[in-house]
Length: 122
Image 1 (tube, rainbow, N blue to C red):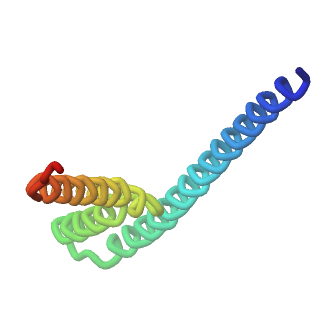
Image 2: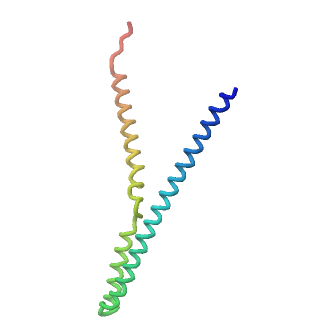
């Protein structure tokens, strides 16, 4: 009687501990990537403010200044299109889907080959 109760209780406890550990790891990973993204954005913003100050000093007229600022903004948009650490995350689901599709394809092909083989009943 006691053995019947202890085993399921230990199993449930093990599942809960594992699930909470995985959740904690995922949250810490998300926090780290968020901090990295924020750090990169602040560094880049600091560079942009420094460069805009330099542009103010260099530009001969307002038209030239606007062109230089526009180029700077374009570079900033290119640099922050995908946050740090998320490039791999975005690619992984596609790779997983490809591998699943390839697996399904090979299974279909093997089943088709199996169906084509002549089967003689004795």
